[in-house]
Image (cartoon, rainbow, N blue to C red; front, side):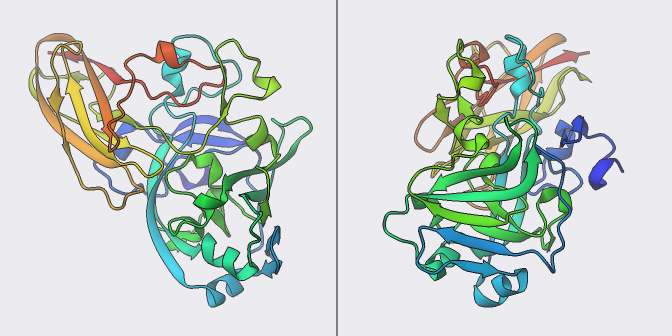
Length: 359
């Protein structure tokens, strides 16, 4: 086992902060992702919190500020479980970096995407107990992991709109797949915001604050924003990322594999965010001249990926397989990463591509 109990074959982009993704094959055919293969995205050292001493503060634009221990959260509020896929905003960044260099950013592949069953309490129930004021429009999350990426260094944080915060799928979670959260995944408590970029599912949560404006934390106000191609990332601005845009990738075979020619099973995942779901996946092995519609599984909830599969008759020689997903609103992935390039390498939703040698 490698760092933090992860698989030995994890693709490690950084050891401290620890950032790693599983190989494609570790995700293939799995409706949930084992903890040892679940991707890890961190911006500072993983904190070591004592669950017995830990407290969650709920404050800001509320009439009844709260300070809750983990035991009080479990005793005072109903327990809920939500199956949800988390995806890093930098997922598939390597495809954008192939268009043009993205200095200072890790070249994530398609594995910064993982699914678990999360157990905890609804954020909405906690906010109701605190008596959210009418003027509250955003809910900010604060954690103790200090990041050197911010200038000056600051703890990680972010926010979501109240309209999302009070949705029943948003949890304050203490368990994944029926077991206590691993330390690297946010123990003792984390936010889980299904359908939104993983950056908003803040780990090691210590404070929830109701606000009139979005969080002014670096990771809300400056980072995790899509900028024009010629913009300075340090200047801020751009579009703040929230709901995930429809995306898919190929998980099996892997890019660069040698496979026999003839009928070949191709599998992958598709994911859409917000209130949308992945609705269709098309796969091509002839440069997009023809497409085969893949079979999609049902997914475990509106907030999880859907795995797809199809069989293609592959000729001898070098073959490029492409896949594109459509969501339930009819939006489809764009063809080329060239038109999506941005200085931070976020939101590469272009068609998935792998190259094979067929013998």
